[in-house]
Image (cartoon, rainbow, N blue to C red; front, side, top):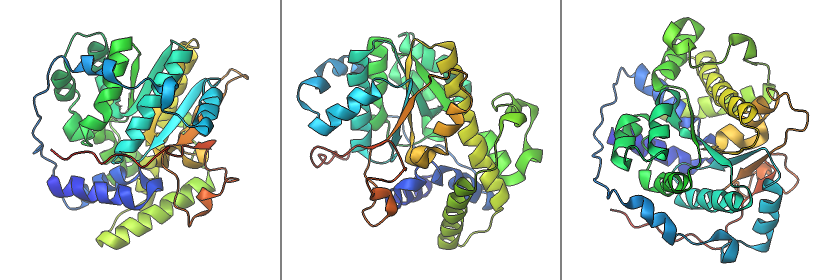
Length: 331
């Protein structure tokens, strides 16, 4: 399992736009190799008082934002849904997510945090954690966090602790690993009735987006060439499509049922960039003509790509860091 997570981390660093897609590739590659993941990641013991650490976090409105970031926050505060696109392995992105959530919650007490990091069957467990009924170790164990997500918990923990302290709803967005695996290896025919309960109706699945398809084709070809592996692109494409459609459907459902809440979405940049992963799929489901949403990429795109151009339509905003992030100590 160690090699698997190392490879995924390395790929995420290499290409910021694949964050959210390489996870799917890893599932396809592992199945093709007939490999089964085993949980070899030890769960370190945590203090039950960890939530109290939130009180020592910096207050974002006082000093941590640049003038441009403050302008962005003013615009984000007006949106019904805000998308914060991350590179999963980049600690600075998660620090920015927390700071933005704090700032938005200071403006609007009703903020819900929708998270790609947790899978749909574990929503009840997330609710129990937010209500204070279980501790952090129980949250990780009961959601099978290490097996199903596996990225550094220390990057996400402060966000969940803040949500718990302020009783902000946390929404699980991700499709179960087993469902994605079956689609990625067998297409529609691989789905079971249990899988179907987590997915939106087939009539809501839109497959006709040439730019979306082309981007996934390039990612698929590049990764398979590097790892000298074979695979079915149509199954890969369908799996990614169902992944994005399902997350979008659950965001739209919550936003529709709870219009008093602003929904802040934490997901890989690959699901958010250019808006054709999650954002546009949310927008088409919203019945409210006044619905507004804004997308933010937390890591600037590479300077040698069109995405770095200020006129690019890749996102509403690029979150430029105020200073180089501090190196996180390795345990």
